[in-house]
Image (cartoon, rainbow, N blue to C red; front, side):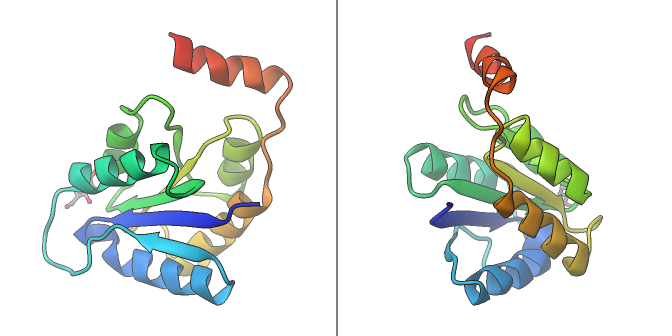
Length: 145
Ligand code: RB5
């Protein structure tokens, strides 16, 4: 069970971050918000790198990153060894991202996915365990390449 979750967004993901944060806190999740804390324009790589470093340091077990499309955050986060960031636009992505890829960062596009859909995707993400087995070998291969 995930105890703590990190969340971060740039200005384009700020609104969705605030809504998802409230949703998670209502469900009694412990949430660490790494910013941005305002709607002013900022640079998504700074947020992505900060969240990934904290996740790799063990501050939390999972992370959520949001930018406008979800692409910039995905690209930046996946530069970190040990981070497996998955841009999810459907519950199927969320289920497979956890079950097969053991993804530890869920990425949304704030200009792509609305709050209602994001909430369902997030719920599936949190409920789905990594299946292990043959998928463990494949995930390990990512780290060794
Ligand atoms: C910001 O305008 C936008 O470029 C950013 O949020 C993100 O979508 C980049 O990938």
